[in-house]
Each structure stands twice: as structure tokens, then as C-alpha cells.
Amino acid sequence: MEHNSTGSAGSNTDSTATNSVLVSHLAVLGCEMYNQHMDLMDKIVSLCKRRGFVYPGSEIYGGLQGFWDYGPLGVELKNNIKKEWWKSMVYQRNDVVGLDAAIIMNPTVWEASGHTQAFTDPLVECKSCHHRFRADQLVGSQCPDCDGQLTEAKTFNLLTEVFLGSTEPKMKAYLRGEITQGVFVNFKNVVDSSRVEIPFGIAQVGKAFRNEITPGNFTFRSREFEQMELEFFIEPKDEEAAKWFSYWKDQRLNWYVNLGINKQNLRFREHAPDERAHYARAAEDIEYNSPFGWKEFEGIHHRGDWDLSRHKLTYKDYTPWVIETSGGVDRATLFFLLDSYSEVGDRVVLKLHPKLAPYKVAVFPLVSNKENIVNKAREIYQLLKPVTVTTWDDRGNIGKRYYAQDEIGTPWCVTVDYQTLEDGTVTVRDRDSAQQERVSASQLDSYFASKLN
Ligand code: GAP
Image 1 (tube, rainbow, N blue to C red):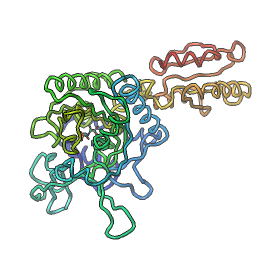
Image 2: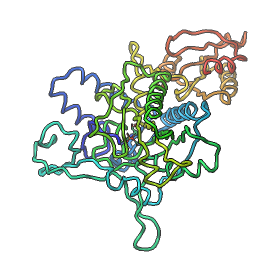
Image 3: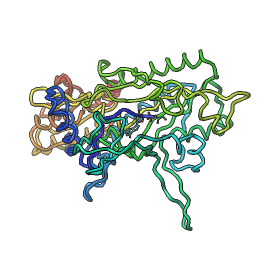
């Protein structure tokens, strides 16, 4: 289970407020580098709101701590991350199939899996201001908000309760705390209905919910978030577990690197035995060098036969072991944004991998008051729309339009100008080099298709 964060017990949803509490704690330590880093965090939070990546959830009613909404650009980025994950984990392999299980399951699932008992964090409360904290995240023994005295730690279960049905007493169930159990309870269904043979995996992407004591650091620790997970079933042998654990560590690290995360900002961290989740025999995190420290991106877990044996499920005459890769989609979205952020002079450039960029191409008419140029540009825009995700802009001057597209990571801008009317060519400007080349408008579809593949 995911641990090890720097959260704030701020009482509202405003990420800026959450960040400023963090900033005030650490700025007093005189840590200049920290200030620079949090400056980056503030810039990302502001960019996300201003350009439509991420908004505070239910903002017009004061928000709700730990909940976030993804805007027009955020949903594209997040969908692209999920698409690339599914491509590499399911479509490009012969040994993994997909699943989409229900968010709410029979509550017995969570008793069998051990979550009703062990899915907990240690909670302390300040006796003066009554703010609550995770005991394992506190540096000192006093309240970080008012220096008050703290209560003894008690275990706090993170499962979110829901009540079902129309007759009293309503049935208590849970929003899933990890998407994983949906895979295990369907293990027999998948084995019986598809031609899988061990070793094989079941992949799933979906929402999970945790009643986190201290949501914070923008979307990093939320109460509602998405996970992308693989449960890979193997023979119950130590050498098999060692081989597949190491294999999946490499696969997952390379996936982030191939999609543009700077390798220097990634590392593995092994969990100490007392830190592991109740189901894990071994666990390593892929961590990211974030503005608020090295933080968990994704966990690779050796779950042994914990889950299948709890659900009394077997394969042939044995209980398989499981190697799990469990990543957060929201965390990936945040870290891809942070890692791709750069400033070139007064220009902000999101150097997102083209496969992840919300828009691949922007089409502009050089001037917006010449009908034949605007019409030609519209024609090209309509032609490209079915080929790749394309946007249109005819506001302001061309330089401002380039800047606006750089800031949201659009890899290529197409400008239709006077020469287009004469020889049918357009300029294509590359986001990262700012170089321009002339390309025949009739070849733009194959030009972008080859760049994207
Ligand atoms: N099935 C195993 C499991 O859920 P985990 O380490 O608790 O393992 C896996 O969570 C991933 O889910 C984490 O690495 C992180 O990316 C994401 N995650 C966990 N809690 C989160 C939270 N409160 N907010 C956002 N992402 C979270």
C-alpha cells in the first residue's frame, strides 16, 4: 500500500492554500532549492487551472478536499497516458488480457482480502486545533500547525463506505480502495472464458477511492484517483518470482523513460519489511524526483498467493503467485507535466511526448482578415481533424499563437499563408526546435502519421 507522503491537513480544497502551507513550513528552514521547486509546483498548478488541465473539484461550492476535475486538455492528456499504458501492457503482448470490474463489490471481498482490517494509516489529532495528521508523516511530536499536543496514534481505515438499497438498514459496502480485488475475484472467470495459461496477466484501469487523512500536493494524494494495474500470475516458485519481479521493474521503468520522463528523475526504492502492505512479500517503488521530494510513482509488488488463497481460488492443482505493477494515472499526469515543463526565454514550453500531448497539431491562418487564407486554413483543419487531434486558432498574432500552443505542449503548428495560395505548401513549426519547414498541404496527413509513429 502506498505510504510516504508529505501532506498538509489544510482544511480546504484549494491547492494553492495547500501548497502555501507547505511552503511556509519549509521556507523557514531557509532552503532555497526547495523554494525554487515549489515555485515550479505553483507554476504547474496555475498553468493547469488557466489552460484547462485540472480544476479543484466542485470549485463553485468551495471545493472538496482531495477531489479534482480534469478540463478539456487534462482529459486528453490523461486518456493518452491510459491509452499508451494499455497499448504496451495488453495490445503489444500475447500474455495479458484486460478487465473492467465494478467499483462496488460485495463487501465480503474486502473482508477476505484483509482490507477491512489492515488497510489503515496511523492517525493523530491535535488537542488544541483538532487538525488531524498521519503519524508516520510528522517530523516532530508537536502539532505542525499550532505546536499543540498530539493524541496517541490510532489506526484509521481508508476504505470509503457507501450505503446501498432503499430499505433500512441499508447495506454497507465500500468504494474499492484498490482496483486489484476486481481482478482476483474474476480470476476463475477469466481462466474459464479465455485461453490464458500461466504465466499470464490481467490488466485493468479504473477509479479507486481512499479516505486519505491528509490529501495534498495538488493531485498527488487525492481521495478519488485512477490506477493502472497488472496482476501477473506465475507458478509459485521463488526463481519464477525473482525473474518476473525483475522483468516487470524494467518494463515499467522503461515505459516512463520511453514516454519522455528524464531517467535521472526516476529511481527504485525497496520497501523495508515493516513498511510493506499487508499483502506484499516484497515491494519496490518507482519514485519520481518531484518538487516535494522523491515520491512514489508506481509500485511493483510480489503479492505471493495472498489474494487468491484468501478468495479460495486455484489454478490446476496449485495456487498461483502474483507479481503486480500498480501505477497512478493522476500521479503520472502530474509527473509528466512537471517533467516536461521548461522555460525558454519568456516562453513556457511543455515538452510532452507527442503521443501524450493533448493536441498534436494546431492550424492557423497567417492573418484572420483575408478570406481566402482563412478558408484555405479551415479546409486544411477539417482535413487533419480525422487524421489526428487538431485544434484551430485565429486570435492575436502568430507569435502569440505559437506561445499559447507551446504552453500546452502542442508539438506542431501549421500556418497557412500567401504562399499556400500559390504553391499549396504550408509552414510546419516544431515546438521543441522552433524550426519551420514548408510541407505540401496535400501530404500533411502522411507527414504527421509518420512523425507520430
Ligand atoms: N494494488 C496495489 C496498490 O494499490 P498502492 O501502492 O497503494 O498499491 C498504487 O497504490 C499506486 O496508486 C501508487 O503508486 C500511486 O501512483 C497511486 N495512488 C495510491 N494512492 C493514491 C492517492 N491517494 N492519490 C493518488 N494516487 C494514489
